Image (cartoon, rainbow, N blue to C red; front, side, top):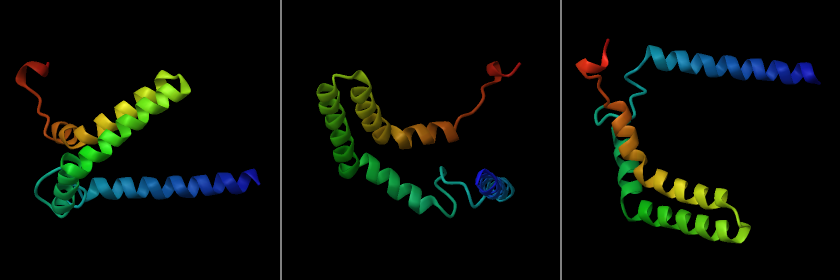
Length: 110
């Protein structure tokens, strides 16, 4: 039984590695964080949803559920998870834009 699970794990790892290598070889198809490319419409839609009324409502709901969960469980982890999830969802597009458009300044290179 263990050998079957190990074999499935190797197959899954091989497929994941093949997809990763394919992504590296064809960077034009996997550029999701730019405003140009095949996935720009999807990226724009998701950004508008998370920053618009839908995203604000979901973020507020996550924050409120975190606060109520933290009070009910008497735990800071439930509170922090709800707050972090709500803030992360709302700011995700800003974070992605910042990461993918980051540049190195001349003073940072030794």
